[in-house]
Image 1 (cartoon, rainbow, N blue to C red):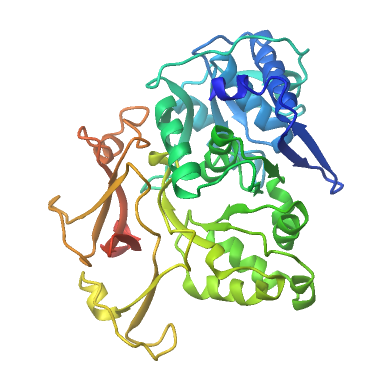
Image 2 (image 1 turned 90 degrees about the horizontal axis):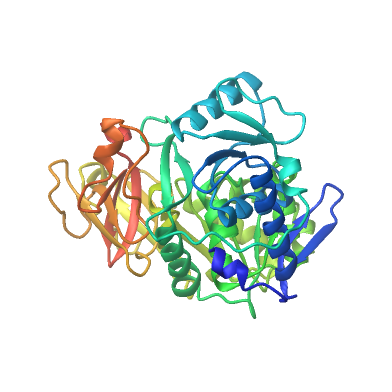
Length: 439
């Protein structure tokens, strides 16, 4: 990743755009981004951090967090993204302190004026890090098995578990999704994201992976979407973005919160991929979204369901962007009994008794494999429902700490138990529920 950014020297093509509170956008060229990264790297050094040190970093507004995160990588410091302050101060403090301890962070970097949680490490002012005097420096060059950063996953119990993201895994994933999955490039594509940057979909999908293929990205603060869900589609229209991702709930909110007149005023004809993942995908939501934004020229083939998890860096499967996403109508009773029996020539409306409509999350990304296994670990056949297991170059080797349940999820053979139930049909994955929901 550092070598990619190092090649931005003298390149004045756009790299990032950051939306401000006033709606104005600030553009950074690739050259500007390199200087911002080098400045932040110097800021981390001036804060007393060295290569190998771990620092919890508040995933605040993108124009602050992104150069700070990339600057940490440049300096060899291991960043640990943690959520920004929101909601209950006590709950946030408890969560962030637990994450910092689990990651064995040496320090915690927060926006100016934010009091660090007790026991979270030596405090550093994040604003000071990114404001350091620009100083050219050579990047730290880690090996493929070194930890680039630490990401957290909720896991089956809801307790966050630290996952060391290996350099090689991030690079393998980035190329699999951007080059092989999306077939994207800087001449034709622009990403746009409002997603939280302490989650893998926002961090990997829009900060790291696009760098590998030089696709520019426009970033909005997450709170902008929370305040006005329609802003997401308006920004895609205005910035001429071709690629964006969001969870199922965002598609639902956007379709409900925008008027027909507002939708018709947009231009979404250039959108190539609107990825949907990170939570269960509801076909009726996607159909409502398509119907709402059809007057804006949205191509139905743009909706791209996917499946992934933090332990695999981000996505593992992706619906082909060259066709409309696939649905499967199956017998509800048979599905409950462990087999996805298809219903031919469905005439009943979705949600009718006896019919389950499931959305395909697509086939595995190149280099990745999926099998469905029963409770004994035996591999199941086509359309048999069982636990989803994945393997591939982007899958984590281990969790931080010594939680026995966590270590049992990632096997020594490289296969990862996801804790999700699903089945394979014609090489594509359909997710049905969580393991805990079926017991």
